[in-house]
Image (cartoon, rainbow, N blue to C red):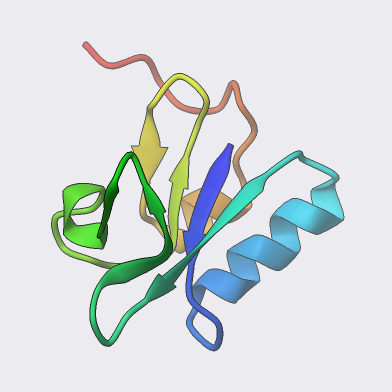
Length: 85
């Protein structure tokens, strides 16, 4: 799983919940003022290419499914997302 977050934003609650649950998570820090990733991914640092609205948190599972809802992120496990139809 990968959590896109910004310090001081509501994404920190998701970060804490995932750590407390012991779930493995990779962190990607987002600069919300400029909507840029602190460390570029795939040659781009534009966060809008990952999340069109530019919001955090965004929790992306290993199979590329994602959610941007804080409550959903806090209660997630790798099997909790429904399969896209």
